[in-house]
Image 1 (spheres, helix red, strand yellow):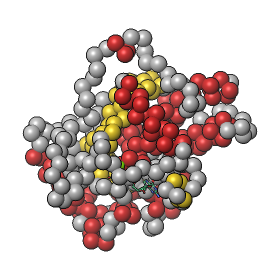
Image 2: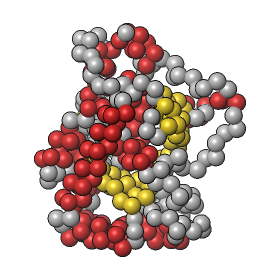
Image 3: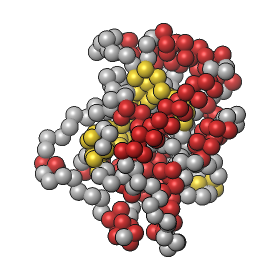
Length: 319
Ligand SMILES: Nc1nc2c(ncn2[C@@H]2O[C@H](COP(=O)(O)OP(=O)(O)OP(=O)(O)O)[C@@H](O)[C@H]2O)c(=O)[nH]1
Ligand SMILES: [Mg+2]
């Protein structure tokens, strides 16, 4: 059975085909289904590589779930991300736009969804001062994920993190389309959480003990000629998805409580409240470690909790 799974799910194997005739359908409009916003170097590309890897490997334990790239271009970029991760590469600075476009099918709780995200210097946080770029329009009608790396905030920046939220809110208000009637659905994902020095122990445990990553790692050890994992490792049925999301809700609360112990954190929450933002917090590590050698990771990528922003986006109505 594991050999069979390995054969059909191994990274080097052909990607699963779409449903019959899907490639003959008119292409879906290319507007993000989830907006990723982040300052430069806060981990957007790494997050997307890790998300691709975990989104693909979810098939290992989610019985009806399948995912595949939306078209040939997405297929190429999906494969490139998976290959880079497998070779322990680390991303360079993003200069050209790349995209992740996946059809996600058979997720009992949410059904079928499209995941389309841009890896670019976004117009809110990503554009460096003084550069004359032609910013793209942000799709404010979908859930927005702000990737925020606390370890990369300078002392001064950390004091004004709530003003960054203000920039985001004002960018939305300036948008050509009016979204005033809709509350902003915002997921703040704390990236590079493996490097947050004062992360409360409970949150550190949550980060380290990612049951979804554990299955994927057990499988890849087995594929590499190791021992067959004890089964069932995890069966991601409706009940376990429900339990996972309950924990996600508790973690949101814990991160909020932790951040509220600082002045900028409490101002952030206040500002979000004042603007009626639907706000969710989560934390993740794309690489799982900071050990590098020769521009590569010294040990394999070990993404932790990288699916959490996606689960929140699905909960908040990512289509
Ligand atoms: N420790 C640790 N380092 C990370 C993690 N994610 C990214 N990094 C490192 O942070 C740096 C920036 O990561 P990128 O993914 O390139 O960030 P980015 O936002 O795409 O950067 P630009 O494309 O330049 O805007 C790289 O050196 C990564 O190796 C993580 O989860 N943990
Ligand atoms: Mg990048």
